[in-house]
Length: 261
Image (cartoon, rainbow, N blue to C red):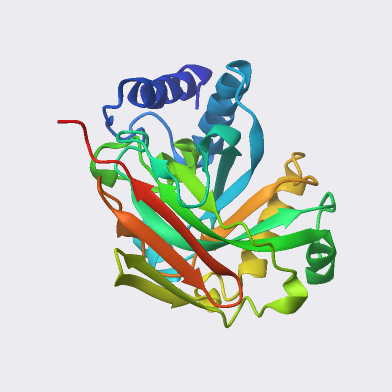
């Protein structure tokens, strides 16, 4: 794939971000093997714009979604400081294109993870605490018409995210068996457990740590890792109020501003 095609795909996604108008898929320009090159191009652009990276998000941790996209492993994208939303706050209308929400376990690291192959013990020692999280995924691609190439290039369809504010040590929670309920104004819209995330949220984080170390951009102390959905994703529309409760971790809440008249 030529640098011209990679740049063209990045520019298409950047235009959608700037205008708030979703674009056509980028798979006409690139293939799956080139998608992370587009993501890196976008990352360099945002770094030059002064955005601060604060961690990573893991996507495609659901076996059903992997089958849908014809892949057998997760993907990842960057987390930026300006996409973090305080617990209970309101996301402005239009801030996330075609928003969809899911409840997740977030890990916050206190040590670097630089080995080519990590053990679960390495990961546990490196984790300061876990938090409940709501990821509000978004897609710059019109109607979520995505393949693996489209979502990876589009920073793993990242949008914004909300973290709970009561840190929990890993020794004090069973992340595999923890139950999750996501409610919209008190009505259940998604349920699941930690086991839905690659069998255990730590499995997803371990995959990410190994993958990033091998490409020379390892996870570092202070990074936040969104480990992947614990249950089905739900639409997030203006006026919604979503609250996730994860057993052993507590709750986290986010509202979505109504569109201006």
